[in-house]
Length: 320
Image (cartoon, rainbow, N blue to C red):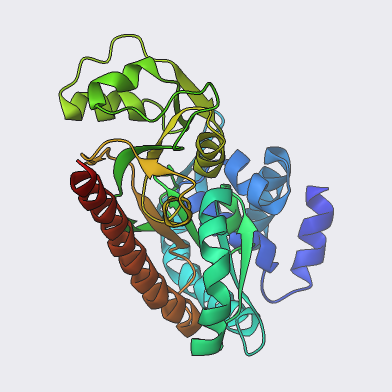
């Protein structure tokens, strides 16, 4: 296999582009398994392509240390010259992909997709920008170009992915006006441990953090986990328990009255929303337009969330 690749490459004046891409990815510290995953190749297939490139160049680019590849001096010089060319090719390709009439593909969770979707028609009217949402939390979707940008909550990412902070939300307990078991909402924070507490499975421990920041003895909590924040909110609206309300996802539930705040204090629990992009792909003007618009929407939704809680607090005081 390697010999056939080598003979074909010798008819060229330059090695195959795929081999250069694989070399750049491996030289920048990715494991062969990670490189292969992005290209749907096995680690052994990646290794063979690197070996074929070295045969084409008639020199070693890596020193082998067991199963590891360590970039040598020749490889470092080669990387310095070819990496900018790969970036130029990717940028030119992205410019066409994001050309007129083509959508900006945004990766995000189901919960944030539910918040974003109603706002997209206004974005299209205001800017002409068409956004296509891909419900995913796979970082490789950014690496491969399946999505151009992504909004996720504190996701570990490789070194070649940049994360831009968008929001560290405040959390407040929310629930339906009456629970499915007939109980009304808690009237004091100290009553919360006696109710089913609804939360996401990842990140874990959000309710424990809330009680710690409130200075309350939590004891043994009945925390029920959900895959997404939206599912936790739907369960709370159905009377299954008390959820942690946060800006963006919670706004429509509070506005409709499906959920009400059952405590007045709110705390930042450490989890944040980030905007992710590949460092190897320069931001296109359409992506910049979307980023500016997104910040405005998040600022507006955060202010709306705070006003909803303030209105509820004022209403409670008036009733008292």
